[in-house]
Amino acid sequence: MDSASFQWLLFLEVFTLMILTRAQLPGTWELLVPNAGIASMHTAVTRFNTVVLLDRTNIGPSRKMLPKGHCRFDPKEVVLKRDCYAHSVLFDPQTKQIRPLMILTDTWCSSGQFLPDGTLLHTGGALDGFTKIRKFEPCELNGSCDWVELDNVKLSEGRWYATNQILPDGSVIVVGGRGANTVEYYPPRNGAVSFPFLSEMEDNQMDNLYPYIHLLPNGHLFIFANNKAVLYDHATNRVIRDYPPLDGGPRNYPSAGSSAMLALEGDYSTAVIVVCGGAQYGAFIEKSTDSPAHGSCGRIVAMSPDPVWEMETMPLGRIMGDMVILPTGEVLIINGAQAGTQGFEMASNPCLYPLLYRPDQPAGLRFMTLNPGTVPRLYHSTANLLPDGRVLLAGSNPHYFYKFNAEFPTELRIEAFSPEYLSPDRANVRPVIEEIPDTVRYGEVFNVLISVSLPVVEIVQVNLGSAPFATHSFSQGQRLVKLTVTPSVPDVSGRYRIGCTAPPNGAVAPPGYYMVFAVNQGVPSVARWVHLVK
Image (cartoon, rainbow, N blue to C red):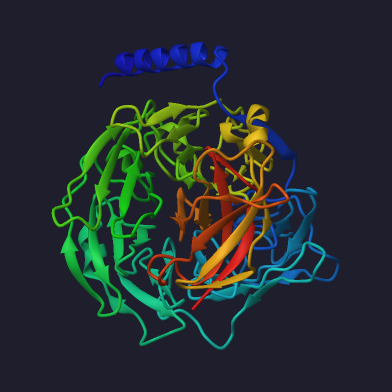
C-alpha cells in the first residue's frame, strides 16, 4: 500500500469514528489520579482490591520517592547509583491513595503470576534481575507489605520477555524469554527443559517473545508464538499437537498482537482462543512507525479434533492492544496504536477507540466500537479488570527514560473505563452479593445470596474471574469460568438464593483467589473474593 492510499484510509477511519462519537458511543472514562509517580509496565490487582504497579529499576528518577532511609545502592547502575525513587507502588482505586514499594533488582520486561495463597510471584527481568525470583504478599494499603527478593532460589535460566502460567496443581510454569528457548517451574523441579518450538518460531526480528499461554480445561497448555501454536503437555514436557498457522503475519513481541481465552462454561469440554492485531512483518527491523497495523483476528476451538482458525476483522487495525475478559464473558480490546510496532518510539497514530468483542454474536457482528479516550496508551501500558467491573488503565512509556516533552510522553495518569453495563440506566438490575463463602473446594455445591432492585426475570450467572499479571499487551493467567447455577429462588426478605457448583478441578480453574461476580441481565455485581482450594 502506498503512502497516499494509507493516508486516505486513515482519513476515512477517523471521519467515520467522528460521526460515531457524536452518536454517543457506549462506555465512560474517569481520571483516577493525575500522577501515579511511576509509569506502570506491569500491573496486577490483589485480593485486597489494591493494585500493584511496577516499572523497571534502571529507568532513572521516577516521580515518587521512597520513604526516607530506603534508597537503593548499586555501583553498577549507570543512571543512579544511589536511587531513592520508587519504581513500584501500591494503589487503591477507591481512596486514590498510593504507597511506594521498594524493588531491588531490574524488572524490565519481566513476568508474573499469583500463587494459590494470593502471593504474587514475579520472575526475571534484565541485568541484575535476569535470574531473580521475587514475591509480593499483598496486604491492605495501610499495611507494610513490600517486595521480597528470594536469595535461596533463582531461575535456572535468565528470563527476559517470558510468560508465566499457573498450573492445575498450583505450581507455575515459566516459558521462554529472549535467548531462552526452554521452560522451567516454580517451585523448582529439575531446572530448565528444552522447548524447541520457541527456537523454531524465532525469526530475524524475534517474534517469539512473551508467548501467549492458555491453560486448557483438559490440563494441557495452548502456547502461541509468532504465527503458530502447539498443545503442550507440561507433565511430560512434550508437544502433543501442532495447530495450523494463523494468517496475517507474526503476532507476538515485537509484533504486538494480543490474545485471550474465552470464558469456560457448560461442561468445560471446550476452549476457544482468540488472537487479535499485530504489526506488519519487518516494521520492527525497519523501525517503521507508520506501517499500518493488522486488523485481523483468528479464533480457534483449541480442543476440537480438527481445529481451524476462523478469521475476523476488527473495525480498526491495532498493535499493543490489551484484551480484558469482562465479568460477562465479553472481551474489551483497549490501548495501543494503529501503526508501527512494539519498541521504544516505534509506534504512531494512537488507537483511542476501545472495542467490545461479543463472542456469542454471529461472525461479522462481534465487534462494537466504544467511546474513545483521550490519553494515548502505547508501548508499556496495561489494562486490568477491577472488582467493581471497571477496567483500570495505566502506563505508556515509549521512551528509554521518562520523557515528558514528546509527542507521546511518559504517562503517569491512571484512568478507569466503565463499560456500558455500569451505565446509570442499568443500576436497577445490578445485583449485590449479600452472602458468599470465603472459601470453596473443587466440585463443592454452595449458595450465593444476592439482592436486586427489580425482580429477577432470568438466570443469574455466577462467574469466577482470575487476577492476571498484565504486561506487553498480554494478561498472563487470565481466565473467566462460568459456574453451573440453579435458577435464583427468592426468600422472605426479597433476596435471591442461587445454587452454584464450584469448578471440578484445577485444570478448569487453578487454585487461588478469584473475583466472583453475579451477573444479572448482562450487568455484573461488585465482585467478592473467594479462595478456591483443593
